[in-house]
Length: 394
Picture 1: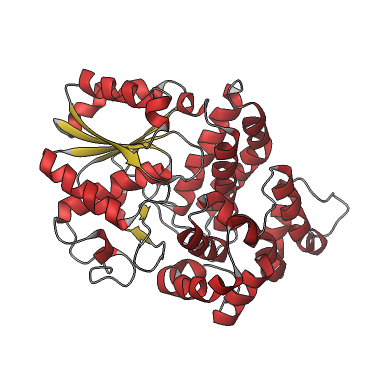
Picture 2 (picture 1 turned 180 degrees about the horizontal axis):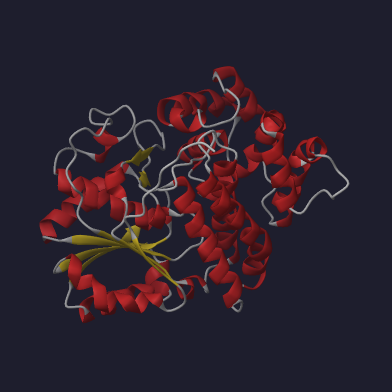
């Protein structure tokens, strides 16, 4: 067994109704919070008012920004950092999906540096090596989707509006202080958001399982996360408003997936690396950006680790005991396609708005911003291999 390491600095509260803990713990992190909420939905569903009330019950003043967009942009983060500092806030609270939580983490980080634009810290920026960074302000994440796992990672993702790159910024200091995973806040999610977020959970776990940096800790969590997605995502899509069990287990699968790619020190592979560039060009829902790439990627890599790809085929519900490990591994592309069809996620890049002339810029972006993720893949992907994968997914 290879040596590995992990840390868990975040305090997690997991379970239905756990958001109520806010009134007991929020005051530990300061006297004034900046509440970062996804635009429209958090107020519409009553979540924003509820969280604000819980913070005030803890004796915390609240300044609200509820205009967080999907795929946060550099210009928005810079504006929100200015707001945090002008308001004299002590910590951030991210309420929503990955965009709101990433915004909370980015603002807390940038406000503590109090130096330049978030663009300076993105790939290619003057401070992208993150040397001598200051301790961020505390962050509380409250996830309302089962998708990104941002409540359990040391990353935030921001779109660079100058070149449409969508890089991640990662540092050990970016782990939230507290994360609340309350399925009650997920019951009202529309089917399409449940679908796009839920398939992202599967990709986090699957990619981490077949990454070069996988380890026994991440393998165990990744397999359990995939098992739960296969059992519960369909139910959450079809009847999520009434199926508390499905929401609970999808929420837990999501957080496990985040732990795997965050503090578990595994990571995603070329599927995510290429998917980020699709999102940067088209602003498509993040979970969907991996879907066109999955089958072509597995077709090119299944023979790199037949034991693991055979295990994927089994957890996806394909194959039988009469088949050899080689046969099961070779079936993995077919199994992946079946999974995408099962969850209504079998799509091409054209379906997401990608045109052939975008492939060159997207490839440039992959190597500029996601080279480390690309190198987690079990096979080498040079420039021509990346372009070939994009063409196959078009």
